[in-house]
Image (cartoon, rainbow, N blue to C red; front, side):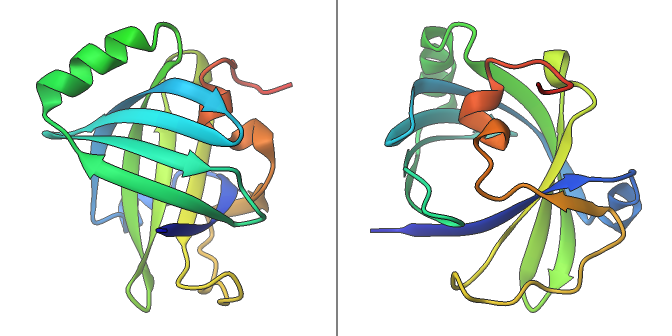
Length: 156
């Protein structure tokens, strides 16, 4: 099983933009938002993926991701109805081969920006926190993308 080990934070300010090495637009929808098994379709630039994730156990969960044709992803996104969100992802080097992924949400989530970092192990230390990192929300279900599709910002 592939594991995703990730910590998530609210972003404070926009200094990540000048530190970023790049960014890209993403649109993603959820075919299933069950806490035990979410199924996501994502179009990121000229690539598309279908991803299945298991329930979180702290910062760890199972993740299986497969590339699919963009045309198929567009058809699958249409099946997601209102469970679709759009965002711009910024990539900020964190050192030691790690990268902060900073997501600026659009639409009804405009104003919400979160940063995630994938770690090599659950007990791995975080790299030094850049100035844009605010409150940690790892494990807070309000900030799971699969839950955000039904929300507006600010979150309640």
